[in-house]
Length: 400
Image (cartoon, rainbow, N blue to C red; front, side, top):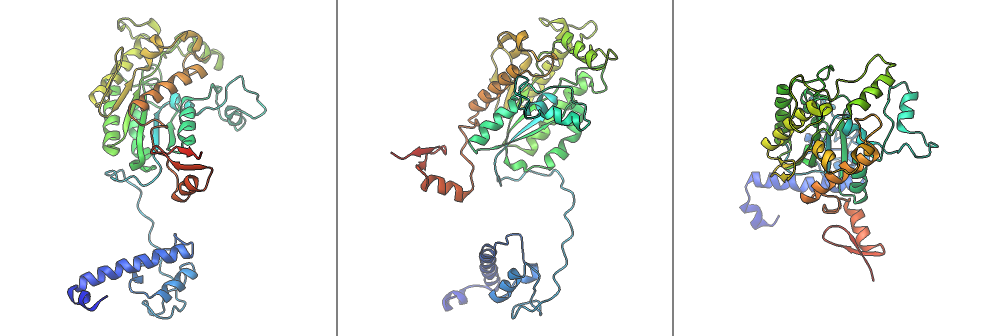
């Protein structure tokens, strides 16, 4: 410090400047010794460069004998800090810290969205379901991929712009997701989530099943889940996807075949006694009431409206998949999954395109988001390859 500067600074200012200088020195030494994970203890404040070098050279084992600066003699390392308490779901961080995340929440229609194979593929490489069955898991649904989330993951990965996290659980309903939400969100960097898909109701509406949820509770659960997501990730857009259509007869035949006639599966898509939604088919009337409740919850949460003329809201969008499959998907019955419930390859492509178009309207599609690459890789790709500097959206311009 210059004499004039030293005279004008207080003791606290000098300590703050010393701490800043030492922090820069520690960072430089961590990079020099490739040991970012080795962090000096709090007592390291005031150590000189020699003591810090000895500390990093020993991998954090050598401390100054007198606890301060001077010659770094071997001493017993500081006791390890106590492990942090379990992570609680508190207020979200305001600054993204890593790669953007696309989060998918829901039931088996989301979980199976990660399927890759198609039934017509060569089986030289075993299907995931084959592997799981050999390990004793009862997986009765063959893959009918590529799934809608697999296609989205391909796009975001190809553009290196985001990661897709599949948090879909077969058999999940609104009650279970509501109870599990803190645990699910506590395991991810919520500040990095930019978009969320939420798909529930396909299990809730089956009143004869243990997973069935009464309509009033379903409505309450959907409102609570949406509110929790918006509070935990206020900047993320939410795309609410309602259940699609269900071929009651096909599903009943599928379940009966799997269980040797012990179960018929007729509860899925059942008609509620004396209550038939206007314009609905008998096999889907009960489900359509849950579709309507999901749409209402989405509209109340600011996600917009769905139907003939859907309108996106300030917080996201609602995709009424039940309506879209009935009126916008050509040859719907030919596109059905063999079990009448889960998505076929054609339905997966339809859902993928619908979600992708919605993201594009939000300026969040893979080609609209900037590439997310480590700085050294981005610099190399833009200056040292056959391509020139990147455009504003991250695409590389070919040198001519």
